[in-house]
Length: 452
Image 1 (cartoon, helix red, strand yellow):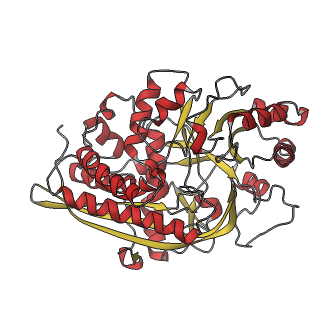
Image 2 (tube, one colour):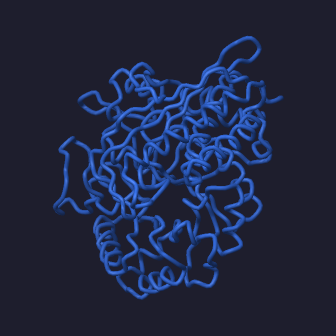
Image 3 (cartoon, helix red, strand yellow):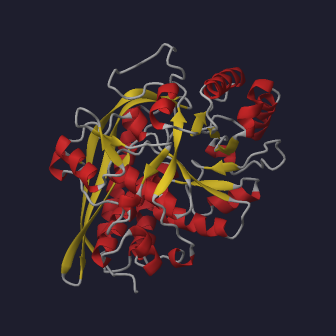
């Protein structure tokens, strides 16, 4: 089919405050609260109006890690990116395919954001959410699900119909172990007493977890001690596990990274954990990551890019320096994920991983999960359910609507509160194969605060 030519007539930006049930520490940042952004678009096609929507958490100290900025300043950077994207998409004025909208409007939005001092990763945030919302509207106009729509060419992009797309009903959940997370049940630390797991051990017992994402601090002694304690808990519980390690840009240069990895390799206590490690994610700060080669470092697992993925050529630049993969994250853009998946399909030595921006229950986790799963990613970092209690501050009516529309993805606790359902370390995504982009329910728009 020909990609539908949509004319964008309205873009509404909103936000909702989110409070974390446990502190999430990664790199030098600790997050306890932040807003979630929502985008709602209206598009005309053949005299009819179709709506599309998207959502992402506005996580501080990930898009811009500058210590000079407060969390609120980080939030405002992302709001600025959203406003610039809204203005650019509305300014196109003409009917065109979703991908054509993205090509034209993204260039304008990025140009304005960069001119106003936003780093590229933050500047991409608004365009990424607009792309998802417009794709949702186009799929609803065509009456097709995400995978069927990609196969049919609904987005009008050059990659979808050349990809070997998957339509899985389940994916493995990779559980994040943040730097502030308690590991064993007898370890002192925060416990909100809300009936949900407050330690890695209790999460394993509750959900049958076997894939983990372990945060590194960049400090040798601290990382060796914490990884050893994590390994001890997993061994005591008899978990046949696999792990990924996340550097979160904590290493200043390749020399420091090499020294750190040699220290880990030299520890007999960590030998089994390293054998079970699948990849190392973005260890170098983005300022140097695409300037220094890591090809000669003694790292025997694939090293992948995440935060450095802030421009279209980033992956190819990384490959030339020794990287072997890249992350899929909807906050960086669906077309970036599609393009990278197409590149990876041509070389079996490369990999695409699925990582999380603390995706919240509802639109964010559903769209991000289906994006990665459709591209063949089989284990995906999901941590929004761990750091936030179910649907958090969303109205109960909204939470129930999503839980009813996606019964396999969510379950309900004895108090009637829906949460992401994790069984045997997997989540059921069969219900996401529905007309539109991964959702048969919508937020209660009147409950959100407008971003002007």
